[in-house]
Length: 610
Image (tube, rainbow, N blue to C red; front, side, top):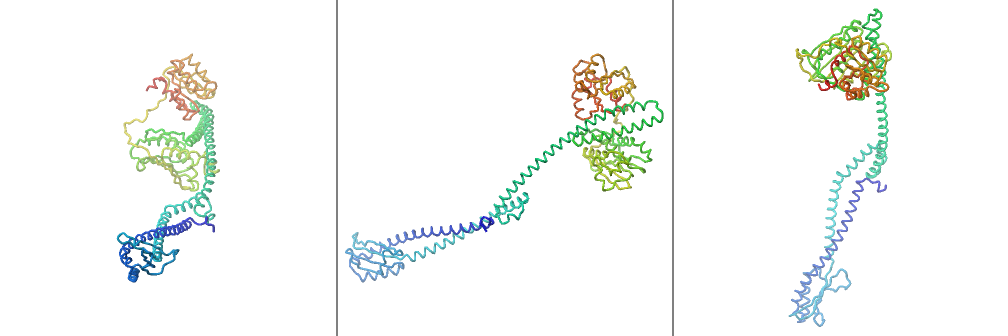
């Protein structure tokens, strides 16, 4: 096995042992050299000091030439110096007067040779030469070196062990964990590099991770491109829905307007029933169109919440009133159960809550052939509103309970053909309740019935008996000759609106586009303008801007937008350009007259300062 493939911890231990052995050897040799030099210097100094004293003592014997006596003293000296191997004393004439031991060879590396003068009364009387053996000294040095090597090795190994344990905790273990995480993140095979060391595996994992990140970035780029395409498609869808809404609302306005007019005529009974059927069909088509448009607004986050204070019990009654005739025809009991105990005012979006209740009651009525429908209003803890719509209809199988809140979804194809509808009501209801920060829940059993529950957090307070929530609406008739300018390019809508207004008593002049409207303002006086927005030549936006800067009459004249463009952007644009109100097509005769009656006698400037 190559050393590069060894685990990192084994490499670490091998390196520590090698360094410890090498450092121990080098330290021992340094100590050996140092001690040898040191001991030789110490021995030289000590011997010189001893020899100086000894030569002073032996100086008299040297002068007296007492050979036997000197030999005896030298033997006694050798007893006290075990390393002494040879001593020789000569007088000043070079004659040996004392000697002990065998003289070593001059090139003997294990011998230390010293020569010292023998003086008496500061006079040279001879010299003394000694030779010492290095064996004991080298033995002591080797002993000390071995001890130092042992101490050094133990110290270094202890230090290396501590460093290894710290490194294992701070470096090696984290590296191993990082390896495993990188292998997991980069989706690499953990068995591929199991014989490689940690650093090699880290490098391999980094390569895999780099490739994985590159693939991820390419995937994100593809997702971003797909998201951009989806956004573009969603915008195109919204634009298409808005365009189709306008195109459908324009003829629908004529249809509903004509039916409103026909209902006031003295028609034969068969024609009245046909007119009523056509009116119901037109209103159903308009309701479905509004559902689709509302869902599109919710989908792109363009639907705003308009919170107002209202009596929820009155709202519930008004919703049930819409279905009393239909329920009576089917022989179904429809009732309101008010469990609030007191009349309460709630603060939320009245229009959206009414739309949800209408959809739920209408859904129950559609799928209930006998029995009852009950609308229950109560509190929900800790503070909010709970509204339940119960029916004894066909119920919903658990398999389909999660799908009925999806748009354009019904139970199955035959189900849709039997009961009709496009499957938008419940989807929009759920979206609207969530927009109001609430929840829409379902509890249903087949052949038993369904129960839809709205849990809506909202502010609530007691209703005062003397509080008036609204003013009674009375039918309006002009008190004087009121001139209205109707600016509309669609001839059918022109005829319908003009007929409605003239039957009430207004005097109506029509214009086909903005240019004709400006010409009419210059030549005649009007109390109010009904302005369409999309027209050839000059549209309603440009015409309004020109009229506001035309003359004093144009500055004060109320201008009401009456258009099939029902988006919030169009409403805001109308408001910024100086239009005073907004009437969405198709419009009923009652609503049209109510809005006009509110503006007759008022001016744009005076209302703007109120």
